[in-house]
Image (cartoon, rainbow, N blue to C red; front, side, top):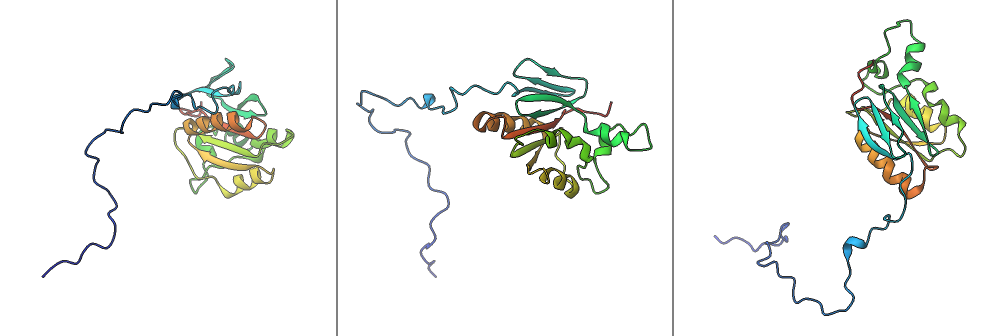
Length: 191
């Protein structure tokens, strides 16, 4: 019994037998692909995140936000941000100043509307809020998403290190007036 010829092309082709790329070019002007950095001459924003620490952040302008504070980056300005304080202030338990207070019963990230108060005051408002949730990522509660979206701001949720990198890139490309970030320190333990 003979097997039918293979009708579907292979997903993987054979490896090249040689790494030879052909003869060298004789052109006078060669393209240096290392110089094709389109953002090379664009300065990074002063509120770019240089380092994410367990207890804070180092910004490009030399500002250090430490002591367990998060940071809210809006319109080229940096603000110390503690969304867990708004939850603790509204509760009966004085020891509820912890990150667990920001996680609802369904395991979703949820904070009071007061945590976004600054975003309601700035004009023009940013188009996008990048939310960094510490070392790991949690789903955003529908109520918190509604609060942010009611301000006319879209939200992107990531862990803090990736959120900081995304903020740096987008703030460089689009400008600090169009992108904001709300970042919780990676090692925050609810001090």
